[in-house]
Image 1 (cartoon, chains in turn red, cyan):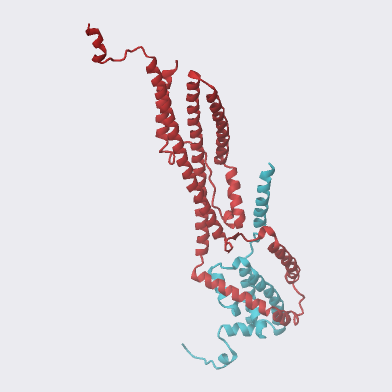
Image 2: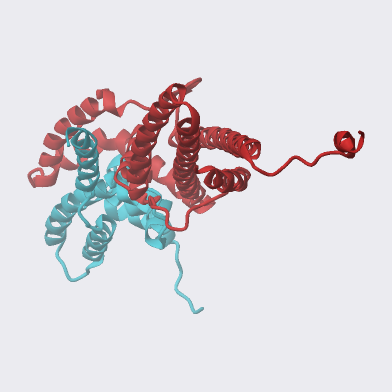
Length: 291
Length: 131
């Protein structure tokens, strides 16, 4: 009879799970695989719709992503084991049923551990992504913030100069080039030739579907809008993850209660089979004294 | 492998496109300033015959015309608030001498002197004296 084992194992399992349950949301492994994206200038320069793809691609190549996938695979296998054990328990009787229930509880505990590990990894992923997006947003706003009054004035002057130049281009050509005996320069000739090609290419780029500006509800989105939207999505995922961890906590508590119930059930059975005499009351012994 | 390529290839193409777009380092403004200085020197050179000056100015003007256009079309200069760029765009007439002169149907010397506050009238009315 393995009853003693269950008497010990049941409460231990319950205790382990009960201790784990409240700490699920904050528990972290010591040696957890990492993902270290860099909020580089290149990432900022990428078009908005490519930013997400680039981040996702970088994550897919990380050790953290591999660990999540591995854990996912283990969870799938563990789910299958639980399903098999549940079927076996329904058909088993007596001591085998108790043994299988114990196994079932142990496997459930492992399943919860795996789910907790996956949740921790996903939380790490979301937190890292959130930090990266925040850094990107900060860099983006720094770039905009670098427009000091002097620089704003300079850009305005440059704009005016270009407009004035464009406006007087034909007149300048006429007055300088027509009068001059020197032939048109190589720069002027090649610039005019290249300009036609450049205009064609620019038109093709403008019409290219991959060049389309990201759209959000309410109109076209800027890069800042897009990053803020990604940040909001990540925060929503973190909130959902916390809710999932609460669910895991409840699952762990339920397994702990099941373990205690199994332990008590085994203890009750053992007490019933015991040779220890039931303590009798004096009233029960009266028959020995009355003739 | 194919899914990796699907992501890697466009990214690589995009990054290659942005790196290809990086312009060749050439300080257009410095080149223009140098050419303009030489042209002004030619204008003021008293040791030259008028015909010689005319020939030199004409060829110099063509070179400066191209250089001015290079500066005006140079996107690298947009928003670059170095003292040189700030000074250059603060006064169009003085910096883009060929364009400003042609626009006003004046000679480069006239435009330049006018920008410095020197006119025939002011020179003629000037008196010799001690400061």
